[in-house]
Image 1 (cartoon, rainbow, N blue to C red):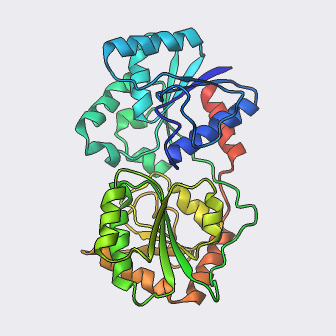
Image 2: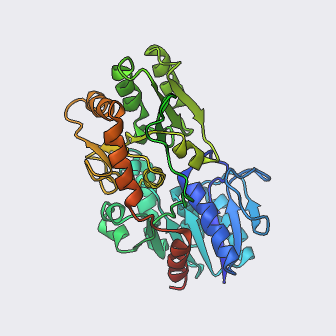
Image 3: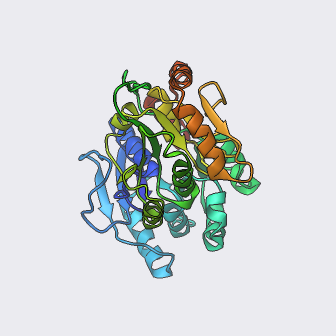
Length: 356
């Protein structure tokens, strides 16, 4: 079966959807599918995540909804002759859907965000909704995410979770006796992730947790704002922002506590993976995609934001960071959880979807 996978960029540093894109395309190719990839990158752009050298890639350069470019995109896809097209995120599935109207080719739209991400940009939300009639099926990464969409999208949605990396027996040293401890956050530097709240929370307790440092992994358009806040609060020696990393497992193993300050999540893949490496996790009780993963007082802590999110987070962080025994109890419960789903299970679901 010939399947064309489309994505805006494979060069995004540490992007969660981009990582899943690489895992699914590589996995289906290994299962015998005839896979080709189209990106909207400039020709020859290097992929952040490894893509099989055996998969043909077509870099078309930036695309828009200009009729001329849509016609050019349609022509290219028809030349490639796929039986179906899988496009990741609205930046690719919206133009692909419009380009392939009445082509007879099924378009599968892989969505990785909740509607709240788009409703602040009304034009993007309107275009997403306008593309729905031309899309055969959507994928969502959780039931909670699916139910957040309106009925006309939800009825086309199939839930396929993102694959969770196998920890391979690598477990974090929660006590870290005799060395500095690390509070880890992983996520794109975007307002949704609310790293600003995390930095301010850490500033409230920095003097009482003198042997702890904060490490934030990821890239995004909020880097300058976050770096300015770190300087303003005088935290340059205690907060690290090294960007995206390729060996995320090593980061989990080197940390003693995981924090996810997000306002909303679709699945919280990094949280699941952190817990699989034996890290207790802390997040907000009102955050969809986090409150499904963390069970308060069992494998982590869910914080009631009340009227002051940074202060509420600071108090919860401090209690965990100063209590090694409590963190260890939470870590044991996190490790006891089933790691699900593995890549082979996810690929089974994709095969079933594409057979529709």
